Structure formats: C-alpha cells, structure tokens
Length: 303
Ligand SMILES: NC(=O)c1ccc[n+]([C@@H]2O[C@H](COP(=O)([O-])OP(=O)(O)OC[C@H]3O[C@@H](n4cnc5c(N)ncnc54)[C@H](OP(=O)(O)O)[C@@H]3O)[C@@H](O)[C@H]2O)c1
Image 1 (cartoon, protein in one colour):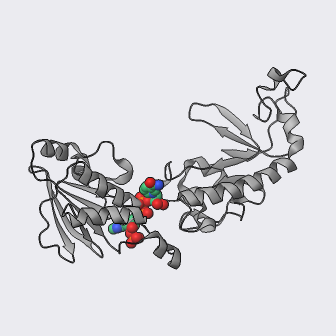
Image 2 (cartoon, protein in one colour):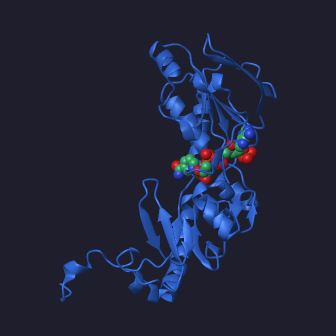
C-alpha cells in the first residue's frame, strides 16, 4: 500500500491530491482516496500467544494447537478414542470467550473430561467493563454453559492455575502436565488447546511497510495511536477498526460492539474526507473506482 500523488501516465490527468495504491498478491492495482482496514484478528503481523512455544515434535504430532489454528474438531487421536469408547481428557488454556466455547464444543463432541485452566479468574464482561482492564472475558451465557458442564463433572474449572511443566509422550500420544497450584487428579492429557489470544503489531504488518516508512506514527505495544476518527494520521485517510483501534475504542474494540462504534466513527469521517477531495473524483474516474460502473445503464433518464 502506498499513499502518494499519482505519477503522470500521459493518458490520465494527474490528481492534485494523494491517492492510495493497493497492490494485490496477484499484482492487481486498486486506487482509492481512503482505505479502511477491518482485518479482525487475522492477517500477517498477528502473533499467536502461547504459554510456551510448542516444539516441532509437539506441534507436528497433533498434540496441541492454538485456537486460531483449529482445522478439525476434536483432533484425530481424540476422535479415534471417542469412537473406541475410551476415556479422553483435553486441556483448554485461556480465560476468554474462545476458551469457553472450546470447552463447550469438546464436551458436546464427547470428550470425557475437559480441564479448563485459567491463569486469572473466570471474568464476566461486566467485571471487565467496571475495571476496563484488558485480558480475556467470557459472556454470561458461556459462563453459565461452562459451569453446567462442570456441575455434570464433564469439565473441571481451575482459575489462577498455570502449567509449570509439560512433557509429551509420542508413544502414548499423551501429555504429562504439572500445574501450580497442583491439580492432584490430573490424568494424562490427550490434547491441549491454547485459547490464549493473539497480539497484533502494526509495525510488523507487511501491508503497512510503506505507510510505516513514509508516514510514521506513535505505537504502544504494537497498537497504533490513531486519531479520534480512527485515522492513521490527520493527513492520511487510512482507517483501522477492530483490535487495531483498541487504544481509541478500549477493551471492547475487537468485539461486535467495538465494530459498531468503529464503523460509526469511520463512516462519519469518510463522508467529510470524500467531500473534501471531491475534485479528485472526476479526474480519477475510470481507474480510481470512484465512479459508478453501472452509471451507463441509467442512460439519460432516472429510470
Ligand atoms: N463472537 C464470538 O462468538 C467470539 C468468539 C470467540 C472470541 N471472540 C472475541 O475474539 C477476541 C479474542 O478472544 P480469545 O478468547 O481468543 O482471546 P482473549 O479474549 O484475548 O483471551 C485470551 C485469554 O488467554 C489468557 N492468556 C494469555 N496469555 C496466556 C498465557 N501465557 N498463559 C495462560 N493464559 C494466557 C488471557 O488471560 P488473562 O485474562 O489473565 O490476560 C485471556 O484470558 C475477544 O474479543 C473475544 O470476545 C468472539
């Protein structure tokens, strides 16, 4: 992505305002007066958080995965055991909504017991709002669901608990885990899900290499200090929403409510920015994607 005056191509009039040029991986070029990045948790520049980085032996053995990497559920070894009517034990590490949803899914898929390990407490959204702190939180609905599974002995909830040692045995395809505080009856574990979230760093996103070089902005632990309108800079109409707008929208930025508030702020500002640059529209029509490609269908009458 670049943001600059367009070079004189001879056939097209040069605009007197800067234009974004976006080049796709297939080499296609898109031109625009404003850009909105609404990339959620995905995309390059996002690094998954793990309590420890699984070794290639552990990762490749279908022994554990991050919640953003789940391809089939449950894992093959667990599915086979369930089919053979053998006991299965799965650990979920987390404390956010993903972890609660995985606990629920595992129980529903027939895992004998799910061990839910949280380094902090079982936090509900309301408590998060009161303290406005970051970290995972679970909706009241999933808090209820997880507690119901625990009441039926299908899940075991361990708050303030961390894994202190781990060893994977490829022969038995099980983990031996030690926790602090100790869970005395923790059996060999068939699979571990790390629902431990992800960290986004705006300086690490290849898409933004040029923007970071030409229009540097302040960042805090990888999050950009956007304007109140969620714009990169007052002079650069590149908008960001979701997790990346966290410093402006607060802890709720990656959630649905954050998305709604973000969209509202961006749409108001876009109206202003596009109005200000109206004169560019006529000059770039045809290759900036500013005109309506269906306009010719209208003919002279509105019908
Ligand atoms: N709409 C939906 O259906 C849906 C579903 C899932 C997720 N989401 C949203 O997606 C976003 C991401 O959710 P998420 O649950 O994947 O992540 P998250 O909300 O960031 O939660 C990650 C959890 O992992 C814990 N954690 C982080 N590092 C750890 C470590 N090294 N060891 C042990 N625990 C660690 C954190 O503990 P602390 O709390 O102690 O920091 C936190 O509770 C959230 O905004 C969530 O609401 C939405």
